Image (cartoon, rainbow, N blue to C red; front, side):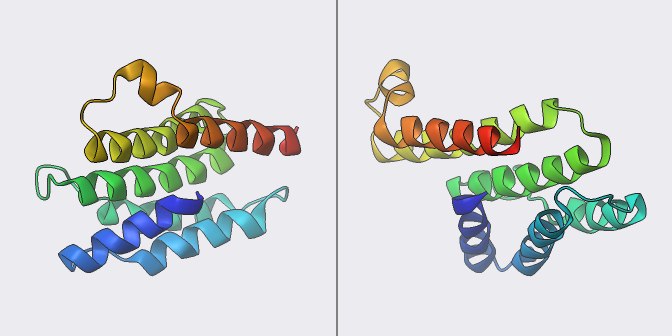
Length: 138
C-alpha cells in the first residue's frame, strides 16, 4: 500500500474531503494484527468507518479521486482479507495498485499502448514488489 496512501492524502487535500488519518489507522491496524488472531468486531469497526470515506466517482470524477478510490478500496479489501482470509482480496488489492500506476502512466502519456503499459518499468517493478511481498508471507 506504499504509494496509495499518498494518493488518498493528495485527493483529500485537493477536495477537502475524506479522512486520510483513518486510512492510515486502518493500515496500522492490519500491520499490527498481522499473524495474530484479530477481533472481528474491530475489523467491522474499521470497515464501517472506512466505507463512507471511499470517494464516489459520481461525486468527484477526476484522476485524483480515481487514485483515492483505488487506495481506499485496497485498504478495505485488506481488512476484509484479515476477516475472512479469502485470497480474492489479495488479487483485488494487487489490481488496485497496478491500475493506479497504469492510470498515472496513461494520464502522462496517452499514446502508450496496453502492451507498452504492461511492460513499463514502473508496472514491472510493482509486480516484482508484490511477488516478493507474497513470497515473504508464504
